[in-house]
Length: 324
Image (cartoon, rainbow, N blue to C red; front, side):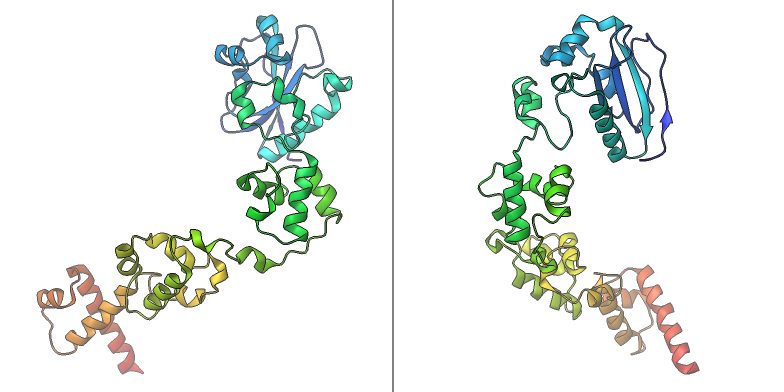
């Protein structure tokens, strides 16, 4: 756990000041009580949002009912600040386990025991807006996802079949960022054996959905690397994004293509291959005793600043070759 700064605001104040952009764990207390009835993790003005009129009208649960009943006498305290959200989450979960929910004989009106495991029965008492964004999945569904992905080596799209888990959320589950307890139980401990190989993640499962086909990318790659065209010259007429195609050529996307990424990265100015090509065009005319800058601009099609830069480069190369 990160080193923390302890900050206990003045008791009885109607709102609590906070340090912007720093994560913290806070608690709400009834008047005269030493045990909190709610603990949470927040950033910026989160601790005060529970007391906003819009929140109190929207929510109908024990925490909100308590705030409505004891509004002016409730004490708000920021307990600790943290440098990372993960550390704040860990401390929040520690406090929940320490004080325990009312259902478990404790004093907390929190709905969830953990950010990873949201209880099914909580859906009936949280607001509609919160219910829509609350992710609730059973252990059986998560286990099915694990087996499909790690043991059967299926794609994420295929792994979520038979469950209610969306593919976008499945990524976080498979990385262990969600349902961390189940991840440690099934994957880290080896109950579900991980048979996946590194190349599995580089296999394109649905090429029919590709806007730019793999064959086109290989064709563009060969044109650019041979100096016959630039990314802009090949991509823009086809309606493709040169920046995205450049990411593919640099190995940041569609790595299963196994292109010569080092060759692309070694090109002058990355994807600006035309600069080297125009320099060669400049050398052809300049070496033929065409020294007038205006004439060179017309012949080569570059700006005066570029032509003068080419002249300096040409003279340096000549001096270096004569010296050797």
